[in-house]
Image (cartoon, rainbow, N blue to C red):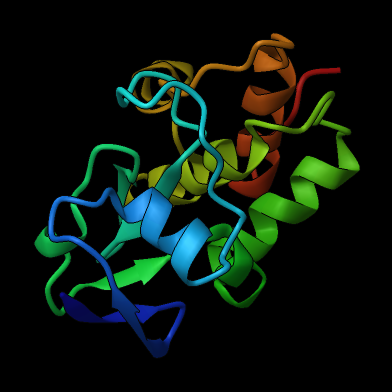
Length: 154
């Protein structure tokens, strides 16, 4: 079935089965490879994208459920005012180690800061449920604080 998807501000067409996960539609059909496959069961967050600004695990989100919603991937974060700050903080603080989970981490962090501009540690703990196998959680927290304009502990 043909779907017209609004992805990163562009209308793109994908001819896929209705139950195809958005992740595979993005990666395999549309060539948007920022969202990563990690677990396939919405646990790790490597596949996180925004759907109308809400962080969503695209590995279990069927393409048929997208409708007219705006899908935003890591590829568009440099054009997002908060996403740009998050990416800059990530780079400045050398958050990434292997880097595989980082697109999903940045998407989750951007959504957090859009909702809670000055998050507490508890806010970060609640929102950042993505898994990082390299355990860069301390640097992720510091980058979120830096992107929000808060002091970062050395």
